[in-house]
Amino acid sequence: MLTKMGKMIQLAADFNPFPFGRYPTHGDWNGQRFREEFLIPAFNSGDDVTVDLDGARGLSPSFLEESFGGLVRAGFVAKDVLSRLHIKSDRDPSFISTIQNYITNVRT
Amino acid sequence: MATSARARRRARGRAKDEASFRTKFPGHLIVVTPPILCCSEPGKLRGVLDFLESLASIVMGATSPVVMDMRHCQKVDPAACVLLESQIQRCEATYGTKFEFQLPKDGRTKFTLAIFGVAGDERYQPDQLRQFAAHIMRVTSGAKGEPSPGERTFEIARLAELLADPTVADRVHGALNEAADNVLSWAYGANSSNPSERWWVAGILSPKHGATFIALDRGVGIPATAPKNLGDSLQGAMAVLRRDRLWTDLSVPPADWQVLWATIRQKRTLSRLDERGKGLTNMVELIDKFQSGRIVILSGDAIYNYEVKPDAPEPKEHCGPLGYRFPGTMVIWWLEADKRKAKLRNVD
Image (cartoon, rainbow over all chains, first blue to last red; front, side, top):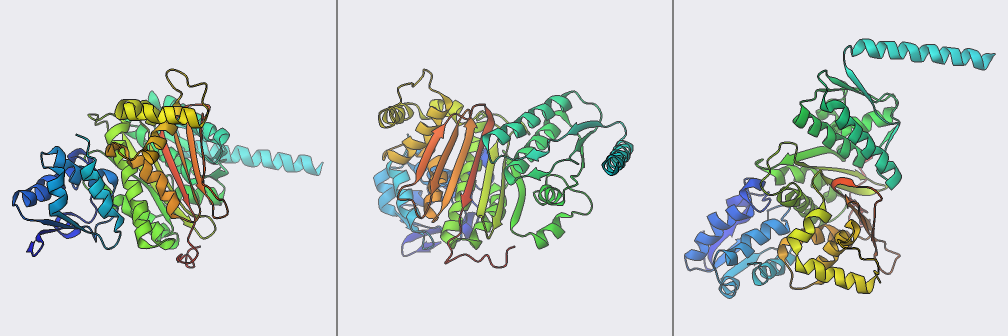
């Protein structure tokens, strides 16, 4: 979806309400898949990207790190990702800083 | 004389019971469970683990079906249910064992085994059990490549919605997911796909004790995988603990409990750290979100305990040797309800 904030990805509706794990071997709704099928195409479009986490349940560090930290491992520049990425997480706002931390301190 | 007559009657009853049992299971290999299956104390846990080990040895070469004779089992706790279920599934997957059960005479024990999905009979249908015991979530298991593990852990974690606000309950779900994910990533080796290499979770909620969640794997354990996965940062945490805790006996290689404590500690204290390793922190810090709670992690020859109490100024943390090897990793959370937010009145 294209909004004033650029591309909008609703994790629960567009991907799955129960995302789990890092890699495809961990289950269908893993972080690598979310990154490759949603985040990377959105960032490649050049727009800002808003990811709405509300509605998704049981977000774990592994899923979030692989999704967002994995962008930097995939070649995106952390500073650029941070400036173009907007996280909506009204239910638990602490995820916003957690994700920013994953992007900043990514393991390469 | 009266006592003697009573003893004779009892002996006759036992003989009749035994004959009936043998008739019911002709040609079966019989495995008798211990009277107490509890993990609440290290000594009792060892009894459970010894039984599970002997169970595997007995059924390994068995060609006939196996009946687990639980008639004299008088007590079983949720953690023991998870362990027992894990061993049954592993034996089924590894040796093709077919299990049947002679259920305990003790009604409470029988109910506990049935409600956690370990052993039951036609009187204990899962759907009926769920209707009058919605506060207990049977042991759920998963392995690599299964489609939606997060949906299954949600079934367990949603119990927490009855004792905390939705955000905190969601953190419980996140912690269970992370535990399961860690199992798939590390516990059995990255490229392994053995069907017995699974994770197990279960949960129970009570007005008196709050919620208990259990996550288990039967892999190599955190002390075996952490040095390889965490490298230098683990050594740094080990050095800090050595200084803070005055460890003068840091053996080379370090003991399991020293590795486990450093693994947890390095993730809780260092700011710029490998985010791949933060899952364990997430599991421990969940306790801080409740007014009172405790987490116990058993892995290898180590037991870690972290406890928060409303009347204690500081959380209590301890890690030490278990005295024997736990086969895998088990995490148990005890979470006390926030009295202001709990909705436990309908739960009995």
